Amino acid sequence: MTTCTTTPQPPWHTHTVRITEIVTETDDVATYRLVPTDPTITTHFTPGQFNMLYLPGVGESAISMSGDPTQTDAWMHTIRAVGNVTRTLARMPVGETLGLRGPFGTGWPLNDLQGNDLVIVAGGLGLAPLRPLLYHVLHHRADFGRVCVIIGARTPVGLLYPVEYDNWRSHGLDVSLTVDRPAADWTGQVGVVTLLIDRLRLPRPEQTHLVMCGPEVMMKYAAISGRRLGITDDRTWVSLERNMQCAVGFCGHCQLGPAFLCKDGPVLRYDRIRPYLSVEAL
Image 1 (cartoon, rainbow, N blue to C red):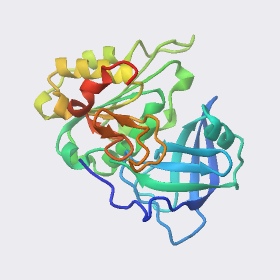
Image 2: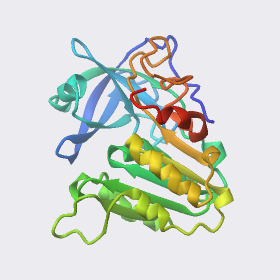
Image 3: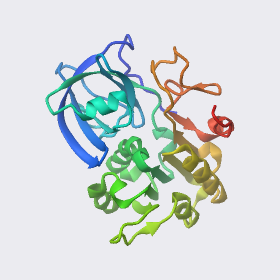
Image 4: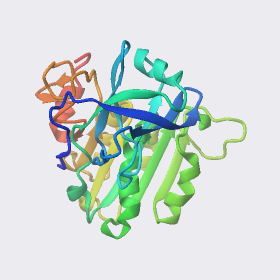
């Protein structure tokens, strides 16, 4: 598994970043471009990692990177306004500053994925942590075989980054969309993402990895569908973000079984975490 080596020392050090662009994605989701006020700081990260965004007097929140990992002058974060920190951030205009710690956590296992076929499954906002991986695949397309991307959302207007789908397809990615509740003009698939997984025909399942992020119940059943296709749990990867507060495994709030999701995750191999996801309210 790929692990970050760029976490600032000490991990409590907070950079000041400025909002230089806000892109509205849906009614309650926006993508923020955050540029360090110190021009000597580069924004390297491994796809799948996260930052801690800090608003003085409000709090701190763990948010995955959603931008291109080759970009070294800004961090991109796609954020839903659901809590005190994110709702406050949603009211901040371009030009405002906030604090940032990171990057933290493990990234997608790029070395393990290289040379293999990929089934990438995203549910709702789960596409945000997967987008840096998709950018990596686009930049290194020859290093990967067949890549199937399955994206699900509750409604068509909830689909993230729709303007990018054609570009992904132009690089040979098989992009499929599905929604729970279609609009009158929707002509695509309707239903849960597992229906699309079940329809896949994998030419070499023993050399295929399933990579996913979204609601935990979605990932649980997607893994079952992957197993039916011959993708074993040791070739299935999930991103989990639960109750992250310190980002370095000190506070224990994000513990799930033996893992601290902030430092052992958020990306985990499914066979490591599967027994604990089935325990209700753990």
